[in-house]
Image (tube, rainbow, N blue to C red; front, side):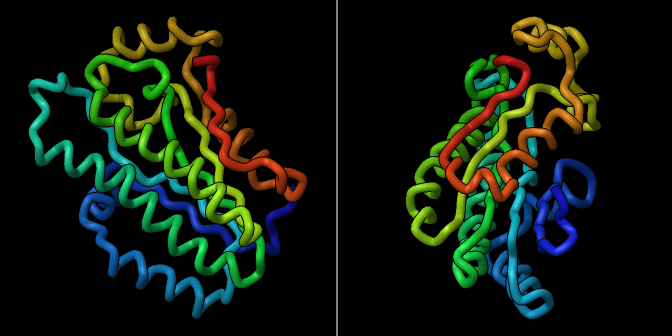
Length: 204
């Protein structure tokens, strides 16, 4: 599939400066971002909501401030970007929004209560937006990756990662290609009848 003539927005803020921005980004910043997209390109075809932060911590040890940052970056950020994306996409009566969830939701992983809750909220948002935006020609879906060998899991103990992969049907770490395979499926013109779906990777 060729994306040469498409305009896509991919958010991705899992570490370093990007992570800091995800935690600080408020509603006015999001609106300014989309005003730039509108004035520069005049359209938006795809949005992939990949920005987010993760934290493994027992619920009894999780500071309220940390929980708030996780919910803001993972859920509120996804909501705001999706909302502004839809406003641009509705002009041409077509568009694709793909949100990133996680296998932490169905696996109910200990130590990831707040993270999993934030991603569960993203999934509920995805399903409801699919109904709200369907009449506008916009589909909304989500993909839930298993652990992928990135900087995000370098701080996670190896035994914890191993426990997760052993609970999967496909017992290995995921790859960027694995994730892209599902995202690309959601973006295809032939997938216009697919909306409100969540696909977990690895057989979670």
